[in-house]
Structures are given as C-alpha cells and as structure tokens.
Length: 183
Image (cartoon, rainbow, N blue to C red; front, side, top):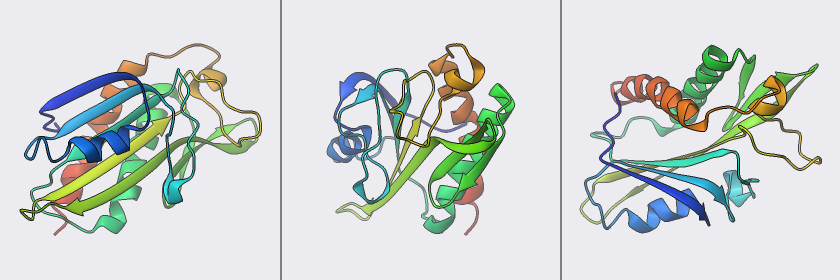
C-alpha cells in the first residue's frame, strides 16, 4: 500500500498541484494526498486549462520517493493504474494516450475521461519530490466543445468518488512500487 502521511480534503481551490508545491517545504518528509471538490485553475500538460467543476475527482499525490527511477515511464504507469481502475470497477473500455491522458470508449469513439500531470523537483537538501496530479471526470458536467466524457454520462448514474479514489490508490501503489524497483 502507498504510505500517505497526511490527507487534505478541500472544497474549491485554485489547483491541487499548485497547493502541493506550496506546502512541500512545510512538510519535508511527508507523503501527502490533496483532493479538491473543484479547481478554479486546474491545469494539464503545457499549462492547459483542465475543466474542474464539482462532481469530478481532482487530486495530487505529493510523494517523496526513496529513489528516483526513470520519470519517462511514470506517466504510463500512472495511466495504466487509472485505466485498470476504470475497467475493473466500472466496466469501461479504456486506452492510454501518451503522454498523459486516459480515454474511454463512448459510443463509437474514444473520449478523454482523465488526465495526468507529473512534475518532479529536488529540494535544498537533495530530497526528491514527486507531484502526481490526476483529474477524472466522474459525475461532473463537461463543456460540449470538449472531446470528453464522464463515468456518470456513460453509466447513466452518479458514482461514488471516494470509492474511485480508494480503488485507484490501490492500483497505483502496485505501479509505483514497480517504478521504484525499476532501477
């Protein structure tokens, strides 16, 4: 299991990823999970805006790995854990669109259901810091101009966000351990 020392469940914030960066120096040894019910400045790769209204699952894992393995494979492994969670728990047909999206079959086309943002940095005392941000469309309404869908839209009923997070963390823990042991 993933060793998380602190969990911050928040309402509306600017960005879980931004908050993780801000609090990292305050908690120099802790692994922290930050969740938000909505984000006003959610972001994806290249600072692209991520629609983060109420009903989705938005979180950042602030992790302090014992050793830093090859970061280029971590987005895939995180996506793999997320895709597996959606397949096992919701029966969705998924595929990973590298470097950081998870798509699901909706009708006859694949649409975006989740995004991943991974950032790393070294602190003053050379400890490694890893930020894994995830946004999943669960029960949230999406702008019509996006090529995206939600679990609720596919399953035709509201889903338990806490259960989704718990299931993802179990799958991710396995992938994270594999990543840590890949050196």
